[in-house]
Every structure is written in structure tokens, then in C-alpha cells.
Amino acid sequence: MTAASDKVDMAVVGAGAFGTALAIVCARKGAPVTLWARSGQHAAALETGRRNRVHLPDTERPASVSVTADLQRLAKADLVLMAVPAQETRAVASRLAAVLKADAQIIACAKGIEQSTGAFQSEILGAELPACALAVLSGPGFAAEIAAGKPTAVTLAAHSTDTADAICRRLAAPGFRPYSSTDVLGVELGGALKNVIAIACGIVIAKHLGESARAALLTRGLAEMARLAKALGARSETLYGLSGLGDLVLTAMSEQSRNMRFGMALGGHQDIHALQAAGTPLAEGVFTAPVAARLGREHGLAMPVTDAVADILSGALDIDAAIDKLVQRPLRSE
Image (cartoon, rainbow, N blue to C red; front, side, top):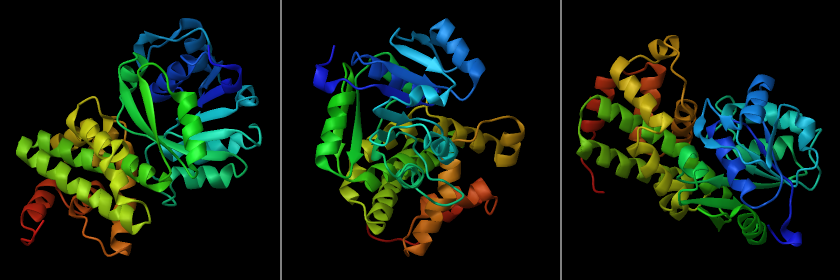
């Protein structure tokens, strides 16, 4: 049990795999945790069945985690983790505005950029929940491993060191180690941009181009991520930490990654519309790629891997043409 001064009511918004895993982590602190699910049916199944049979069937929900579809149940929460998909953050946050306490701390956990506006998750939450203290959580961690208590390290960024350190202490649990940072934008960018590179790596594997090609994409993709981060005002070195390089390696090297699997499916079908028609869920990198490519152009940056993924997704290039374009780029120094 935590000390009395550290006790907080915690809430997790979003009962997918990652949100459920975060709720389990929070429960290890001994504080009450409320997990919000969009669907009443999903909430009822989680509450009565003690397992998220859709996303985390092998992990039992602790008794201290209560599940609800009623946002009003979050009214007493001091610490709120936003784990809905990035494209849904604004809609859910606008509903939370009438519910949350003015001094609540809210942590953006989705790894993506809003496609319609180009806004980052912290910008969305700042606009919809201006009274709340904001932080961002990102880094390498698959939900099933986090829920099982396997060692996981992530980055927690806030605009002040004291806030970041305080939230890290609240979230740190056996098997879950958050490192603090004040580079909110850099941490967000790492989590969002690595999804684009992971799609490219999935295509490489599906096209049987080899591990050497994947290693090249990882390396040059990371350089693009750091280049864009610096241009936007973040610290490029953040992209070489857990929330950049760490998350990129995990996402682009494992078929547990949704973005990696999407790239593999894309490499097999070569048509995003066919994948959508077949019911293949769109990965966050699909929404981030065109925004990242646009930002690169606006800042005069060379981002050939990101551009190639964006062009494939838009239909401007087929996969073979995009690969030829990358391979035939003019020679230059590294």
C-alpha cells in the first residue's frame, strides 16, 4: 500500500489492450483504479468476467480495478491516463471537460498525431482540458507484457521536472519503470513517428527484401525522426532514448506490433483500399505518415522513408516504385 501522501484515485480512459494494461499497472500501487470503456457491453463483460477477453485474454483484472462506461465515475480521479486511439482523443477529451476535477493530472498515452488538424496529443488535451496538468507517456512496451508484469521501461514527460518526477513516482510499479523528461514534444514525436517507420519495415519483410534492408530503414528512419524533432523545437537526443529508438526497435522488429503487421499486409496486397475492404484495422502510422511528410516539406527536410510510406498509403506510388525511388536516391555522405 502506498503512503497516505501518495494516495491518488487513478483512472484510465480506454479499455483496449494498452489501457487495460495501464490499469493493471496502476492497481499495483494499491490505489483504486477506474477503467473507462466506450461500450457499455464491453465494460460489463470486463467487470463481470475479470478479463479483457478481446485484447488481453491471459491476464486477470485485479479486484481494485473497476470498469465502467459512465464518464461521471471519473469525477474524483486525481490522475487520468488517456489511452483511447489518437484519432479519438479530442472527442473523448471534450466529454471529460465537464467531468474531471480542475486540478486533475492527465497523461497522454496514445502514440499518434491527429490527422485532420496535425495536432499532437498534448495540444489536443491542452485545448480541451485547459485546467488540467498535462504529461505524456511513451516508450517500448507491448500491452500483454506490461500486464503480465514483465520488465518495461518508458518515458514520462511533463513541462516541469517536479511534475514529471512526481508522476513517475505514482506510476512506478514492480516491472514498470518510468524515466522522467521535460521534452514533451520529443517524447510525443518519438511515439508517433516510429509507427511510420514500422509500416515501412513491415513492407520490407513482406517483400522479402531481407534483414539488411530492414536495418537500413530503421537507421535512416531514426535519423528522419530526430531531424524532424529538432526542426519542430524538440530535443533530437530524446529520439535516441526509450521513446524514440527504444520504441522504434520494438515496433519495427516484432509482429506483435500493429503497425508492423499492417505494413506486412500492405506489402502483400499493395492496396490500402483492399485491406480496408477486408476489414484490416488501420494502424496509427497510417494517419501519422501524411502529417509527418507534410511537416518535413514545410521545414525543408529530406525524409525519404516517411515520404515513401505516405505516397504508398495515398496511392501516389505503388510499393515497387517507392522501393526503386529509395534505392536510386543520389549518393551522399551519412
